[in-house]
Length: 111
Image (cartoon, rainbow, N blue to C red):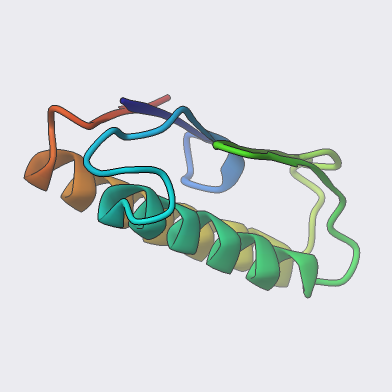
């Protein structure tokens, strides 16, 4: 089972996300649930890495992806806050959908 933890501020900005473990839907390398989770995480990481003045702490290991925003503060620019809000919405909707469709393979927790 893949365990996903998504942390957002009270106003919705993304603070951190982790996805750990193999879903177990199929063999490693051909698991559509793991692939869907990886695509969501990697897409958000790509988008966030292109935002200027945003510092991320990222760890990618086989079966595990996690990241956190190192420099979050209320004084971030409106552009950065909007990017973090959109990224949080994107991940939350995607993970919520996957966990509803495959509840025995994905545990999604939002803080």
